[in-house]
Amino acid sequence: LCSPGREVCYDRLGCFTDNPPWSGIPGRELAGVPSSPAAVNTNFHLYTRNNIGNYQKISASNPSTIKTSNFRAYRKTRFIIHGHLAGADLPWIASMCRFMLHVEDVNCILTDWRGGSSGLYTDAVNNVRIVGAELVFLKDYGYSPANIHFIGHSLGAHAAGEAGRRKPGIGRITGLDPAGPLFQYTPPMVRLDPSDAKFVDIIHTHAGHLFFDFAPGILQTCGHLDFYPNGGKKMPGCRQLRICIFNLFGFFPAYRSLGCGHKRSLRYYAESIITPNGFVGYQCETYRAFISGACFPCPKGGCPLMGHYADVFSHKTEKEQQKVYLNTGPHSPFARKCWSLGDELGVAMKRKYTIDKGTFKPGKTYLNYIDTDISGNISKVEFRWNKHLGHVHQGCMGAEEVIIISGGDGNMSAFCGHGSVQPSTWQTLMLC
Image 1 (cartoon, helix red, strand yellow):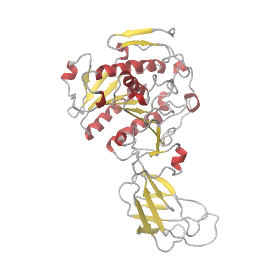
Image 2 (cartoon, rainbow, N blue to C red):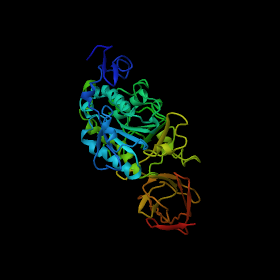
Image 3 (cartoon, rainbow, N blue to C red):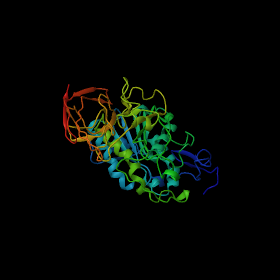
């Protein structure tokens, strides 16, 4: 540990101190200054449509590498910034650039700072500031900040925030499950917050408190739009592992066992690139209100889209800390559509959904909200009811009408049925 008040200065990047709020405050109980730029070894790997399969290494300290590369100033530039201990995942993260280049003509730059992120978590936290300064130094190469989009995962989200703090006017920052430990509830200067870019959107996938929830992601809102898929804490398809976490300065020895939920934000974002309308979110105060249907369907102004196309939402910067909820599937494709419908039914793709349980009364309407991977138009609905095992009375039941409302656009379809059916028998309902 170094004594408070220490300062180090580096050519190109300036000086760094460990004075508050960088250390010695509640929630930020660490000391020390960043490693040298040489040790952090931040590299920029450029992918464009001219070199989708192989990156070009560029550097602002060597401008000729930019001049001779396929970088073009007329394109939007998207930076992807990895987090702590991301070495094994770097090839997969780089594939996000390829997804982008299939749908848009951009400069996609993978920011590789494994030299500063592969050791202790606390050291990586300090080194976030070096990465932020390096991003600004590269950006200052004659390029408008409004055309820049930083996409940072975990600690990479706060590196993006540091770059935005240093250079106002950044167009957009996307935080993919921003790291929580040593950042949660700290001053905005230390962490990613809405002032760091014109538009800041966040995807929370393993949020909570480290010592209570064993969660590496930040729980608090820190953007204009904060998306909490599945509530933001537990992701379908990820096992919840309980591990022993020791000594603040020996953080995350079992990081990879925590990785599934934390990395889901990367998976969701990658899928969103190629499914523009896949991740429709609903603005709600709580996840409980969302699953109850209180925020369904989308208002006239539409709903925000989680991921790559979050910036198309017209009210995205209307205010800060807008909470947005949605559900996803347990495996790829993760995107789901939200529908409102009644009774128990199966849809054309052999999907079955339970709408209600209990005693059914004639003439009453039953309502439920479901998330499904069904796309396109629904042409037929089938209704079935099951008798309780202890129920001895015979009887028939039928659905007179099933109404399906799409949460994304509010479109409504009505299906009409005739007569009734015995238990465990399908009744077909066609468009009215």
